Image (tube, rainbow, N blue to C red; front, side, top):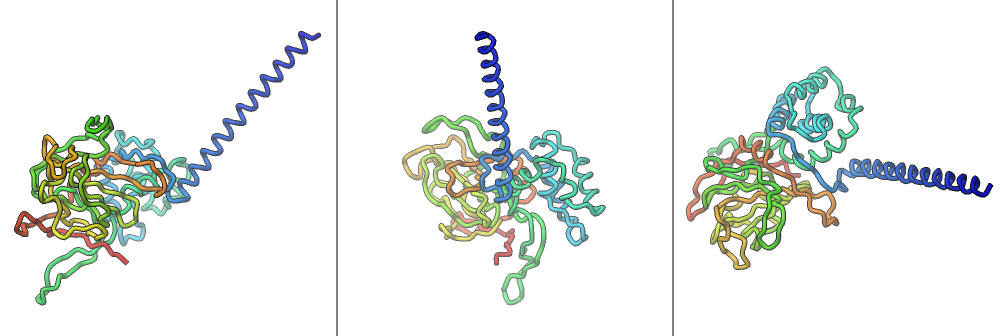
Length: 339
């Protein structure tokens, strides 16, 4: 009798343990689901990481559909298209096919809403927030200078489209490969959280989108560098290893608003040294990094791989002319509609 009672007790304990485990698992998924909803509802401010694997081909196709749809009554938002496919692919755009995007566009043109199309897509909202954080300031309305009036005043035209530029000026050669995450050992072993664009010393470096200058000065890793913050506060652009002796465009200062397409500095090979203005790099290049900022109080740094973004922006490069004294000025600018 005592043996049977002991067996029953063991069974009861096993059942209780199983039920407790199930409750813990259920609670975990409920918390995780709630966290995901809060991430979306707060504009993604609590996201801890974003893997940006959208290809330049997909971005180019989505941009064209967006621009072509303006004024049609069925405007298409390019980030919606990319987020739909992100949800379909699980973020892996290596399987991207234009026909997949065309099917979404066809449904939108027939009058379906993006909410209708994405109603059954579990992670659409996540990818929408993630991709908006990367691409949100790159397309929209802007003013482009079209000429100069007889009075000497510039003339502008209001346009819609891509208002961001490649970090390297038009007419200046560079080479690059996808080196994000490669090992670096100076100072300490770490991952390379940026993208190296190899060119000649003095190549004009271009501001990608309209930003505020947040940081200027020397850093033992990046040499002479510039940190730019997007107007919506979501993106931080990092330009490093600028030219020795003359790293920055004349007059550039912290707190200044700089328009997309403007020259901000010059490619060089400084850094990897505690001695200021030292050329510690083996080859001249621009280190270009993109950090996403969701939570100002968080110590987490979310850097994305900008390789495909650079390829996408490669078709939109700002033209420059010599201003004398080793300076260049931009001829191609996008003036944001700043309130």
